[in-house]
Length: 188
Image (cartoon, rainbow, N blue to C red):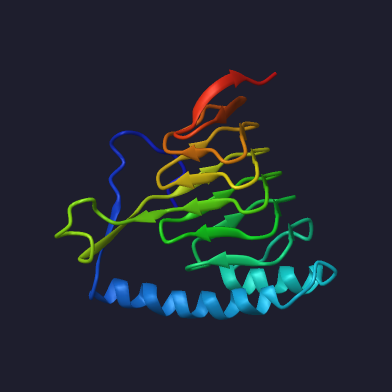
């Protein structure tokens, strides 16, 4: 997975009706089933949640990983999580483009990480999907109901304020807020 972004980073293009899009829809069906299984569990079932999340992503998660259901995703297989990651309830990780959550990342309730989108041009919208990765570096906190869009990297130890919509990279040790989000101050 790409872990850095710059202006030259081109989106991955998925042509609707192609073998790649068929694989994408197969993953959606699988992810919906596994998310439903996770969402039947209670917070007290932390070991089973970790087991099911590991199955969803195709790789084991650290015993320090915590998730409070419900949880939603469209692929699952493109999510990477570090150690001591916390995902609060009602988060949506739309990971077609890939999502990387570094060590000590915290996602507040109702956070949306959206790695895919459609072209703006009307004739193109149903013909293809575009995708870019989202990277949250070590010790990032994304507060309640914030949305991070495709191609964004949040720098180490930064905070995204509640309700923010992040459309551009956020440097390390920064507090970003607003719609669209902008850095409002540096953090110590």
